[in-house]
Image (cartoon, rainbow, N blue to C red):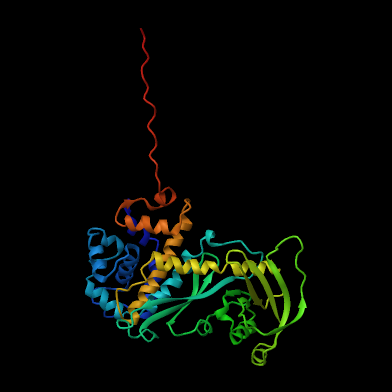
Amino acid sequence: MLLYFLKIIQKLDRSKFKKIVKERQTDKHNKGFDSWNHLISMLFCHFSRSKSVRDISNGLRSATGNLNHLGIDKTPSKSSVSYQNKNRDHELFKAYYFALLESLGQHPKFKQVKFRIKSKTLLLDSTTISLCLSIFDWAKYKTSKGAVKMHTLLDFDGNLPAYINITNGKIADNKGAYDIPLLKGSVVIADRFYNDFSLLNVWDSKQVFFVIRHKDNLKFETIKELELPENRHQNILKDELISLTNTRSQHIYPKELRRVAMWNEQNNQVIELITNQFNWTANTISELYRSRRMVEIFFRDLKQLLHIKSFVGTSKNAVMIQIWTALITILILKALRAQSKFKWHLSNLVAFIRLNLFVKIELQRWLDNPLNEVEKPPPKLLQGVLF
């Protein structure tokens, strides 16, 4: 049996990593701390929730005798980790995340069958990661506050990012979405911050569907009211075809739109949506929007379970490396959960692994049966009294 951490690392496709390293020449002048060592060190940072490069170095040192199984010749020093966090291009780890997504992210359990539509469902949102401006002086946001923003396109299947654009905190949500590559026929679900008709027109021209919560000040006129189902889906309040009446908006987006209003019991409010999809039922459109909560859950898990609220390096490159290795870590965790017979909550899985990183275990057996209840011994047989 091998260590938890070692068995987890063995899930990684090292050949893909070597290929990316060769293409990007990231091991040039590595001075004994190559790209693989760097990756393992940063993954350990997230799994163990190390608070500094000293914690990373000391933590890996405690695995003396097992480092060679991880592909590491010697324990990295804190100065080596700091130097490479600052100087090794973070694009290496970004490229490896998407390479792993092609393999680990294809598990059958990632495929969710909820909507009777053929379109690829993508959830668009952003999250802000706060930074201290006096330390991270490159992360401009507010007068006395720094931040970076993760513009994230989450694949509904597996709830893993299909695309991420990391910008400074000042970039508006809709501006960070213009460069997002989208597949023809896919559907993008987003909140009102993406109610930008220039952006929606670009998506529509690429034959991409959208379901967006519109702003309260939307100016429109009703072209036609569509019939609502009589005995079901009572949460649907309005289904209509509209055209924009604001001169500027109409010039940018001259086509008809569909407007669906639904009642949200959880928040006791009416949610109003616009879409360029005219064939799906109003209930399907409302359910698609409800699925947007999955991207909020993803952000919560990323911030609460992994190590991206504080950083072990202060340069922009170091922060990017920590974010991308956090995404690699959550991809590994979700792949482990998908391969398990046990119904893990992600938070429980992280906690169990964190407490047992260097415990010897047969990983798959433990994933399938973490409770591992000891079988009761057979009842003691008492010899009967013969006389």
